[in-house]
Length: 189
Image (cartoon, rainbow, N blue to C red; front, top):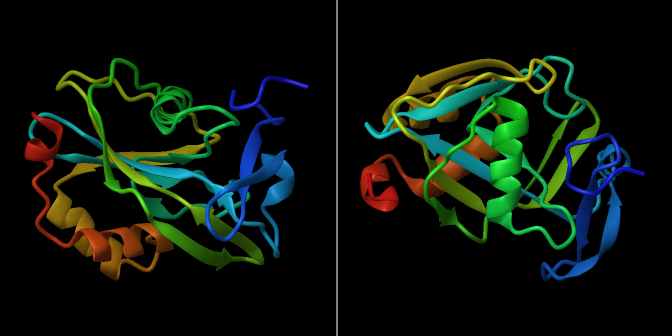
């Protein structure tokens, strides 16, 4: 078996009880189904120095929520892996992004449950903002990401609330964040 949290097919996720306490682990490839147990995840928004967000469309052949428009990157910390390390790992693996700056929590207690095509997501999923330099190079892994685009947060806020292909977690996140987020202030840009 490969190391947990490496992005391989044997990646482990951390299972949680209803109070958010770890109860064990499971293989990521086996945990997402019609009765997905509660598990630990993260959601992140990559922000450039002028305050634009990197918005992604999930690959069309993803097992969960294929083709949805969403925030920059989501994933699962492996056992013993910090959220910040997991975010940097997934940004590198999914989007080819390295050299990130500050990682700041936005919604540390975010939790959601959503269903698509008989597959359920059931996550405690803290939300973070991640600073990147102006010259950041984005090279999406096509097995993870079908499309990337930069947009202002108000544009993304409106897209997440109105676009039929927006992810359910992005919709819930922007509802909680509101429309006026000072990304530059949060990240010290």
